[in-house]
Image 1 (tube, rainbow, N blue to C red):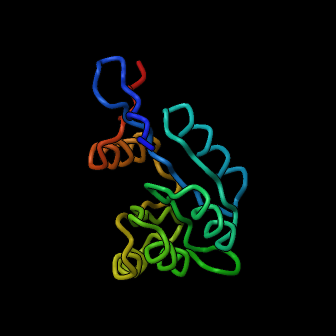
Image 2: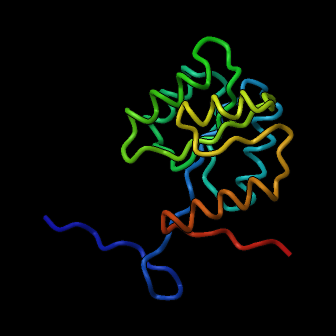
Length: 147
């Protein structure tokens, strides 16, 4: 049995799929606002509103990038990041998206293995630039810039 050839882009090369982005945020309004923005930007976002839900969703839809609130009820963002790194292959890039802004918080997220620390509210241009860099590093389609 042979495998199907990879799909091709209009340019003739292999098609690149958008980033799968897992948004983990217990504020549902903020989570679904970010979901909408990422969807419009051409990514494939998924939303979890708890640490437990994030771990289940990540198994069903392995993310390339996780945008992770640290102050989650139950399993906090630090524990979620640790579990995702050992349960998803290849491990996703994990960015803290949090209101925790002082130097000690940034250092704690760095020591916990987070790849980036964003402080809420995050400018969408900053987040979009970060995701576009991740897409380039992973050989994925970088959504076109609007405008």
